[in-house]
Length: 289
Image (tube, rainbow, N blue to C red; front, side, top):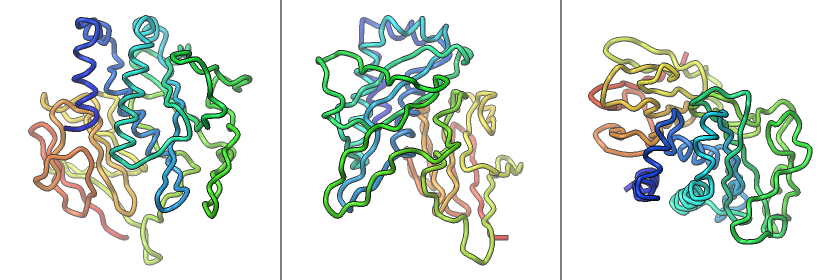
């Protein structure tokens, strides 16, 4: 059973169903959980062959209506989200520099249903506090976006140093209520060999949809990059990431994804891969030129 599905099941049993009523807002907890997973993936730093470090301190920014609806339960929800991050890290063999913390904050510039995730890596020595106490927000956050670079702990002997700050202009997060592209600081392999550029697209019922950005979200919502009108498809069902290789990630959908006949939450894509979402078949294509 996937980490997100276990998270959903645990959440259903909390507070005698209170969360089921609270989460009738546009933002669903499993969407936040999926965003935290992507935040770990996009900011993973390889220190050595046996250690990949990911952020351990997260802030989830919500619109005023969503924040007011969820804030009375922020303590329990934060604990559940932190537990989900811990389970996901164990599955992916990620490690942390300190305790995992997830906090909710209000962002006046976000509309209902939209959210933004920010993260940083905090070493244990810099995040000691009483059990259960929220992490103190960093002072002087410019414009309310992104954390300033935290003092990086010394890497183990022989390991490459962790980057101390993102390059100028790198986004700390963006509103949208769906997946975030990898930050500018994340190295990405070239799209193709020197011989030419690789083009990526998908085909749905004979219609071609070009993949012109690093990520493409498929779902039933009008916010999805490609909208699929299928009752078996979730609002934000899955995300395709182009690269070498290209991959697909389930975003906590209700019915999951099937790739080349295998039910999965994450898979590598090749030219001609068949992706089934709900009752809809999506063909992934790529070609040089």
